[in-house]
Structures are given as C-alpha cells and as structure tokens.
Length: 336
View (cartoon, rainbow, N blue to C red):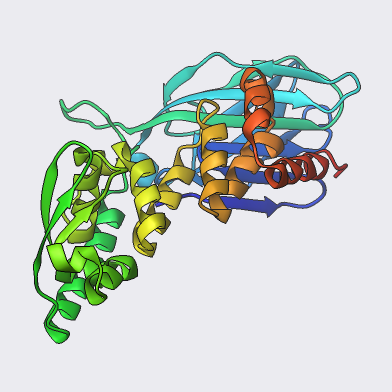
C-alpha cells in the first residue's frame, strides 16, 4: 500500500532515496562526455530510472524499466524535476510541470546548464496514469489501495464473525453521533475493540442502555468507521475520512484501522499537507509517518516550500517535536 522509505547505495557517493512520490538521486561530479544511471526505484507499479548524460549540456532523463509492465501498461506521468549543485556557488534549477507517456529512455529528456560540484536530482510525481490502447481514458493509480484495503477489511471481518460464534457475542446497540443515529452490533464492536468490549462487560451506562454516545464524530465519519469494522468501506470513503478514522482508532484501540491510516497518510505526503501530517504523527505516536514527514522536509529540502507556514507551526508545536526537527536538520546537512 505504501512506498515507505528506501535508500540504495551504488558505489562512491552516488545515492538514491525515495519517500512517498519523490525520488532523490545524488551523483558525484560528472566528467566530460559521461553517462550515469541511477539504481531502480519503485513508484506506482513501475520501476524507474534517472540518468544524466553530459555533452554540451547535461540531459536528465526519466524512464521506466524496460519490460512487460512498461510495454503493456505504459505510464502517463505528470511530474516535476529539480537539479541542484552543492557548490560553491550553490545553484538550483526546477523544471516546469511535465506530462509525458513514457515507454523508454528516448521519450523524455530535460536539458540543463552545466555546473560544478556534486549534482542532486529530485523527481516528484504529481500523478501517474496507466495508458490504454482502447477508447477508455487513462486512469490514475492514486488512490489505488482498494485491493490491499479489502484484504485487511475482509480478514478483520472473518475474525469478528469467528469470535462472535465462539464466544456467543450477540446484541444490538445504538450509536449517537453529533448529527444522527446509527445501529450496530455489540458482538462485532466488542470483538474489534477492547474499549467497546469493556463498555459491555462492566456495569457501565452503555451496557444498561445499549447505547453509545460518540460525541466527537459526525454521522458520515462514524459510518466510515463502522464500514471498516464490518468490511464494507469504500475506497473514496476511506480517503475522505482518514483523519477521523485515525482519531477513532486511537481512542478505541483498533490497531488495524490505525495502521492502515498511517500507511495511507504516508503514501501522499505533499508540501500542502506535510506539516499537518507531522502534527498528526506526533499526536498519535505514528513513527513511520513522522519519519516520512521529517525526511520529506529535510532530506528532500521541502522545508523551503513551507517557509510561510512554518512559523505558525512552531508556535503550537510540542517542544520535543521541535527538538527532533532540529536534530533532523543537523543530520540532513551533515557532509556525506
């Protein structure tokens, strides 16, 4: 479901790292008339390469790995490239937004001016679609977690039904949300959450009245929560309510939902949401998401894209989180 974090070393000072929809390739000084190619990195369903070719100028190429996948399901990619030199003097070039059908290394190249020093190339995929040979329009692969999500939900449902059978957990319950009422089953809620189970086992008001008041969720968000628990949630419903689901999963100790939300939030980190995601990761102790956000900001240099928002963020950020961010800055700027 998620790309997570990866890094590969190809000898010398060449280094390739990926996070979410970004790849960064650091290349040592390029000699005259030389050619370099990165290690393969996976974005979407394709393995990708970056290459640089030096002549009168430097040509940067982005292309999928040749093979059956690229031939039968070629990617229609929308992306940005950035090239920078460590200097001195430090120089940086950013491409316009490109959108190309990419089958091989000849389908796209980006010429940039030559400079001295170690070269770093970033590629950020804004969208990836699978091109088709029929009349159908290309369809974006993001969000494309429906199969993995359905597997998790189905496995959870089978576990709940099994526990319902073996422990004779059966009863109806009413759920009051901020703007409506939903019906559910005590047995299934108790099977998925120790918090719900405790409500029904002990002499609490929920056991006596068969009613749960969820005052911090609206009807629509709570419907998404029940949809996940029962294995009936739809993909667009999950994406729309991920943050509400995460809060509920943390409150009611539902680990499957919490893990699934973290993986999904790690999948589509962007400059517009990275600070919010970092706060969410800190609030709910999501280590993978926190590491992903810090890597996005400091290893990939996206901190410069959120300069206007960072001051407000620091005014409300936890002191320990600010310390971690400072330590990440020191690590990212450490000489290779």
